Image (cartoon, rainbow, N blue to C red; front, side, top):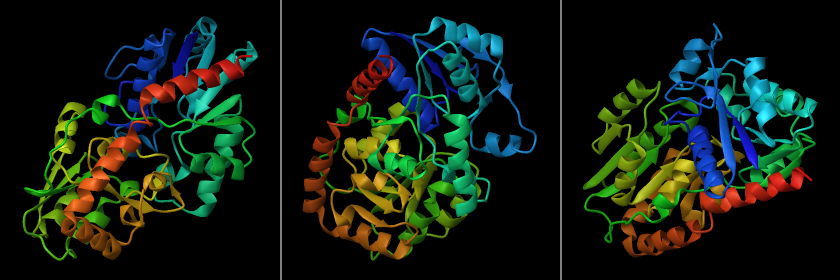
Length: 368
């Protein structure tokens, strides 16, 4: 098949949605399909190049999040759609819905991937409440994905949310998947030396790393503990101030994928504090690489579905219970090693390769 992938910021190296799209594109090519990309040309050159879309009021906010929107150009999009057998749209933004509309006009099948909950947007805009979240879900349903025949839902929880809001497309549960490079990554054999707690994600409101930093002030022992906040983002100054008030050593740094695999290989726990998460690829990569997770449990976190025991989750925002869970794993090294193996085995069913194969079957289904 000739698969056209439409995404605003394809070459972005720090955004999970973009990284996931890059991996699926690579897997589709390995499976023998042709793939072309529509995107703005920041960080690379796509097959169909679009200029950046700037929205005056939101420009600074979007820039702080390290994301770039693409400006739809009808001639470019029409040329891309004319080439394709099937069109995949990856965002709920203008370039995606304009591409989907053009594809439907010429009877080419279109599917979308639901990468973003409204809370991922409204939290950044400081309007995370029921009214605005519902508004965005209706907007996604009636505008963004209106011309899609199917939607790829990373988890069953996402599918339930889309059913709740009466999305009419066929809904396929297909994980974003884990790169096999993380699954195959060797991990240290012993626990501790020092006991290392990892938290991966942009320093932004919806990731809530402050919950972990607050929990660290409540753990029973701070000896021989190292905490790593892997990422970058607009709240860096706030988090550094919190980190400097602790007796625990805290490292704050952005890592490349290769560097991150090395960090994962030498870490014991992965703490995931986000209360709005479609799937949580960074957390998945970490537990695939040998870190035992403690995951925030909230109505809009799909990541918590990967908690294999009560000790692998905590109520979102509750730093006291998170501290108790951290204490448990520090004081139960044998149990930690057992769960390290459980998670590594569990991850082998969640590879990007498996997910890409399921996505191809979905494409064939909607192309009939």
